Length: 344
Image (tube, rainbow, N blue to C red):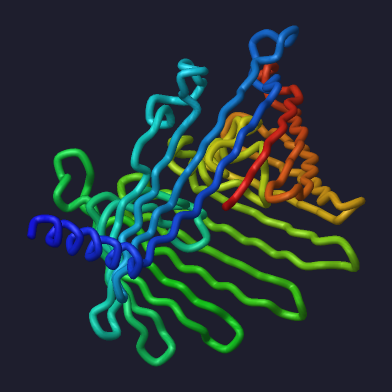
């Protein structure tokens, strides 16, 4: 009898496993850089090497999905002293959340990352103990989200309301936080030219309004982009360190998980004006970026050359970044980097 019960239990377990909907995807990168920009000793470049692996596990049951992202930074038994901060070392849970539906209403709850608008002020920011709902009404998406309510001793509770939809050829997005900000985005394509505009009106104590304008298109085999971001004032550098204007590898220290040759963030400047041109050349994508960067004390220029090549299941990127015009002499230098990315 016990044997029959055991067989039945095993069969039931196998049946559940067979019908369960579980997917595992992920990404990884390894990067190396000879970081001369900002190096105190120009005779020997400061190397900046790091790596990251993420696994995204999604379990589905009907309209409900549980998502767990597991992340491993550079710290391993082989290399116990990576250059990253403590938060980037070792193995840990990167995010954990549940999505489901209640009729026409979509629900998301847990710890996750979220971008507001085009990311001019808030790109990939963490939302802890968060709860959001959204639905569509007449072609418009209406949403509301709140976060950090149960962690008010260490984080400020934030509640946003949002609406997005199309007015003719223009996609409009509005996110409003009664306590801190209002963010407006406009996006459209006119005669094959993409135009994006974002305006962040800050009503918090920092009172820092931000404007981002991006225009891009193609001419023959060349893709071109022009972008400008203006901050009323500089702000804490790490507060928006994932935004890399025009795909820069000089600005945005945490972009792409971490950019070894980046030394600036958008909050370091009151104005960034950049131009990028890219094309295909012998199975490589070659991109040049030129930026003029302004803050209260100085104006610098950034020049970048980025070459990427698709491999079998991976992408290899080599880049050179140079800063000139800085009043800080150690910043007027050139850094080089090599990076291997893979998604699976």
